[in-house]
Length: 343
Image 1 (cartoon, helix red, strand yellow):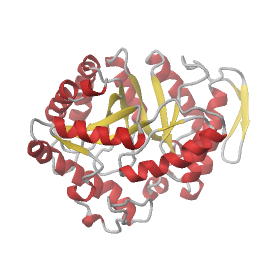
Image 2 (tube, one colour; image 1 turned 180 degrees about the horizontal axis):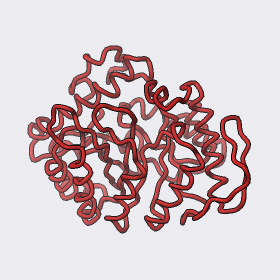
Image 3 (cartoon, rainbow, N blue to C red; image 1 turned 30 degrees about the vertical axis):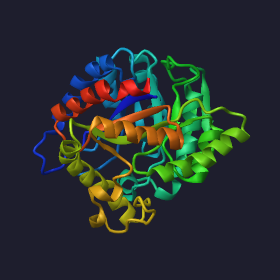
């Protein structure tokens, strides 16, 4: 199994951390992470959040490309319906050139009602816009003259240059969980990147329709990446003291709030649905993240291996309110004490 890192640049208002500091932390972290053996850096994104949750993932990953040489960089995920697809195709082509062909385009249709309202995009159109935008971008990345006439988007004849370095285009990874979306991911021969908001049993359930659709299409799934909140320290007590407030904040303010609003269900580890964000606490979801000492982390990762056989675990260590130095110490310890067990 391989390991990567995830960044969000969330700053809880009461933390006293400047947003600019989180971006500097990432740029300082990544060259060292590459030396330590991490193989990827991904940027997640949301919009109009009170805590700076990164709304510009391509810009952030351009910075990541500039300070790394080998690791893959990518979005995990970018909310495609909130963008003009032709401009998005151009920007992705540029970052693939800037990185020397290391970019992974992780995408999703989105789910948070307020994000669609703020961008003037009808939420009920998100899946149709998402799929149509991807069709448009794939045509644009050919580098040849093309035109497009769809339900939502129209492009007169033109050409997108530069072409992406990766041919026919950068890998498209889906970040979805609905059965229909998972089947569409397989039909497009796209890798599915599994969200950290889902527990282990949910991940297994999500893989089933995806794997079935891939088998029906005669496609062998090449990668099985998952994202997890990860934080290690010399003792589990120390790891929990540093990371539990970050997890509480993340699950309450984003996942729990969205579940309570009816945007997207968040389930407890026992399968019941969160309908009040105040019900969210560190212990509520303790089985889905990996926060403890190195021995604990090794054991939990082996549980994931046995249950869903991930090819890569993308570790969200730079969580909301955790100082960059503490996140870097976790990344160092994880690389020295945990990663060697999975080579």
